[in-house]
Image (tube, rainbow, N blue to C red):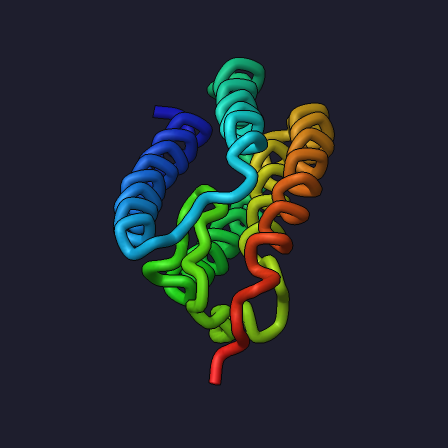
Length: 167
């Protein structure tokens, strides 16, 4: 198996596990009275990620060796992703789900940045194709991701505006 396909299989497995985790959190939060905001952008967000992954699989030759430093940077981003997930815990979802009255999370990377997960995702979308020399995929999907994230962040900011700061 090529390095590219090994990486793609690992990324796919990680994303599927995250979807299961997010779905469980979403159901639990909605059962507690949480509401979803800005659902209209979600299909576009999913499309960007699915098409990015498909482009990696379709347009990068399977035998292309990676730039190991960039692949290491991608691995480092996975550590940051886990930090985000651990910090948000039961509040982490792939949708904008907010539980009215619940305090905002201000631990982990959220002590330093308002939306660290989006920074991680932007890095992943750029770095993984660059690690395999596919700068075109990095540019196209970075721009598409930026457009969808601009919409999503506006929705999320509106949804979180009434939530209290932690004590």
